[in-house]
Image (cartoon, rainbow, N blue to C red; front, side, top):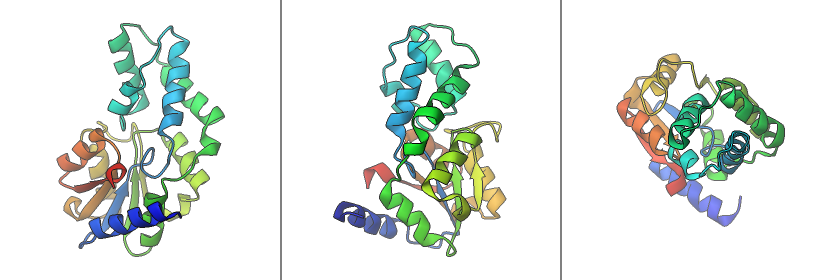
Length: 203
């Protein structure tokens, strides 16, 4: 870790003090420094349908399932997109970017130092197949107690359902969970679930 990462980790340690029983981490942009890779994958696939994608849309929809992001792109550009758009985007991300995934160091180290002390969940708007590969590349798979991904609850972020499922599966009351996020949809979902949260990108 460089000095900046060490300082950020200290801040994160301080902010996460309390009688929490579970830490729930988003994956993309929170544990994994891969948001630009996701944006480039969306942009490449959108270009196949004649769309010059504004990457700010991907920032705004951080945490949404890929299927819903595709619907938003279709709506904003008034271009019909096939149901295969999400799988096409995932394929580009996996084939071109996923093996180069690096951690968001202060969050990655925070998770690792709390293993065994507190229950660990990852709650993502990504597909289980993609998130599982990402966590494997980062070496985190065996450290996580519960993984909740897109399509595994009736509603995704910004609704509370994914976080409530993680709490239920961990056997922890929602108010005893602390959420680590990098986007507004995730923090809104945490609030709706009755959980406190930290924006790791603001640390």
